[in-house]
Image 1 (cartoon, rainbow, N blue to C red):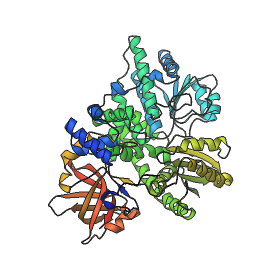
Image 2 (image 1 turned 90 degrees about the horizontal axis):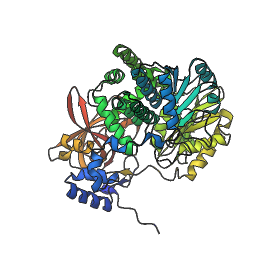
Image 3 (image 1 turned 90 degrees about the vertical axis):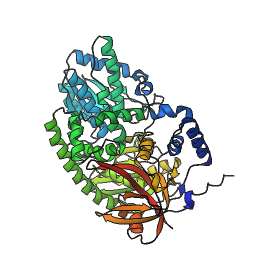
Image 4 (image 1 turned 180 degrees about the vertical axis):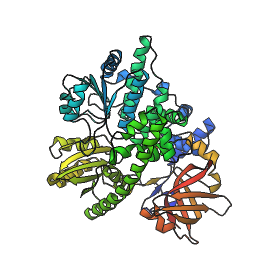
Length: 584
């Protein structure tokens, strides 16, 4: 007999977005109150810590994580020793090194880390990033043969774990793979494959992105340089790149990832890397960087070159030490990002219509279209996933071949399912990790492949429910939404994947609104006691919130969302980011 569901928070069984509001459990409330008494921390902060599984005895360490205490021993990863030895041998012999990187943020930052480290030691390297459309993801035979003919060492970053044939084609040249994508039963014929998601790893570091794997290699290389009496480059100054990759690749902000991002944000705030300074300027960032800025302002612009433009623009921007070059690259990426948004909007509308016609109640939501740009299918898949709370795959078709990208939901391993589909012969190729995957499929087998993928995902529990419950941390009065309160909550960050920012409810509010552009809504609300809070609902008219709130009249509403500090023109104020509402 199952236990009865807890009473809905504020009695909201079905909100404007169709979700049930769920508040803290009685046990969470008790733990938060006990933590507040023993630590003297504010109760709302204690509720946030409890929700993240932090015990009262660990609260102080959690709020001030030390990277030195959390950074794993690089040698705990298989093949790390041989990889570090080979890198240092190439450095001593002044060999020709090529870096083969993926075209996304994780690949670009991984490449930039290696380029920067080698340059600091007086050795230049060759950057190679494949074209998304012409070459596809990961190493390919012609490129590897070309690089092997002119280089002594090829380092593949954020790719290569499944590239058996291309790596074999680099005959006569050593290849080192630094990756985090799910490995198969056999590894490619590389000198070293450093990957926390190899099948013979224990998985304890499986949450690392590729840039973190590269960082650990450089930690080990610096350690070996010190044993030789040499000083390696300052790795702490490179954590801005690791932080950007971790957030943009949606790696969970737990364990060492949280410490890497927290420290990396501090490094980024010093504005010492020309590429990130230029990128922040074109993105009109005038406040200290945070996880939102990395994931939604900087990351998409770095990605834009690989999506619809020249694949190596992002990595070149992150690696350059020339402010003039950085400015030109950042402006080009900003322009490409604007073009990407226009392409994405068209594909998203067509994909959503197709997915709705097929049905949104199964374990998998998918759509495919002729000529859909392969550079935006991953973003559109993410939008479908968010709208349906189901794994989603979006495929662009051209010449009878479909190239697609998928995004998953918590608890459903999409990468493993796609990899199994490839092993069964339903895909031409496919792979990825738990939350994201890429695939190539023949058009005449696409429907069969998606049906089989749905079956595999259903076994993991995909599609069992409707819209996910909306979890709320606390009920607030408008007068409590102060800058001081936001600073207290920020101390438990950074927030992101697997560490979501606390969400608050404001009950029985009078609301005023005005439309902002095509799809957004500005709002202000209060409870009649004097204090008011300004807010924003981005994309409100893409869903039910815009129509519900555009003309609120005398109606009162329960509101749910997150608090943030909005800085504009050098002035900062509290802003509420609305996610859901209920008209009373």
